[in-house]
Length: 263
Image 1 (cartoon, helix red, strand yellow):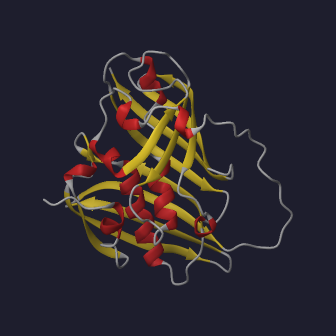
Image 2 (cartoon, rainbow, N blue to C red):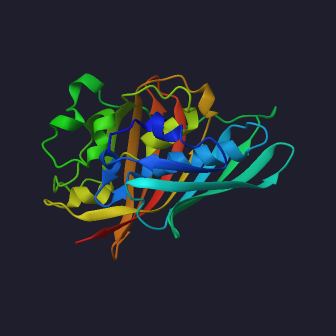
Image 3 (cartoon, rainbow, N blue to C red):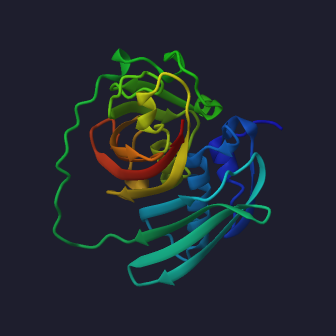
C-alpha cells in the first residue's frame, strides 16, 4: 500500500459519511496514530456543519485500534444554535467503533477578555536534539513531522521527569486543514510516564480533550512548542496536561489526556 500524507487522508472525508484509507506508515503498534484519527473525526464534523464555525473544544474517546486500510468516518450535528453548534463523529472499522468524538464550534462574540497567564520560556529549537536523533525507538508516524525534544521527560530515559517539551511541525502543507493540523500536532507527545522506564512499555490514549484559545484558522505558524506535564499515575492509568504554543509564544490550545500503560 502506497504511503499517504496527512492531508491526503483527510481529503478522503468529503462528506459527513465517508471512507478514508490509512496507510501503514501512520501506525504505532497495531493502531493508527491518535492525532490522525482525531483529525479524521474533526474533518467529518466540519463536513457535517451547515455553516462553518471555529472549533472551540474537542473531546475524543479512543475505543479501539484503528487499523491500516479503510475506515468509515460518520458524523452528525447534535444541535445548531445561533452561536454554538455541537457535533459528533465516529471512526469505524467494519462493525467496530475505533474512536468517538464530540466537539463544540462557536462564532466569536464581543465580550471582555482575560489573556492567558502562562510562562513561555522554551529552549531554542536549534539547541536541543531532533526527534530522529534522540537515540530512541520511535513510532513510524513521526516520519511525517519535524521535531526536537526539550525537557527531561523523554521516553525510556529513566529520569522520572514529569515534564516533556517538544518543538514540532508538519512536514507537509496543512493550510487547508487548520483545525485538523493542530489536532495532529497536539497528540504527538507520548505519555510522560514513559520517562520513568528504561525500556519500552505499551501505552496509549484512553480519552483526550483539547480546548482552543483562538480560532484555528487564525493561527499563522509552522513550528509549535508543546509543553506537557505528568499530573499523576497509578494502577496503569496516567493523567497529563499540556499547552500548545506558536513559535511567537501565543497559547493556542490546552490538552488533557487520560492514558493507559502496561508494564
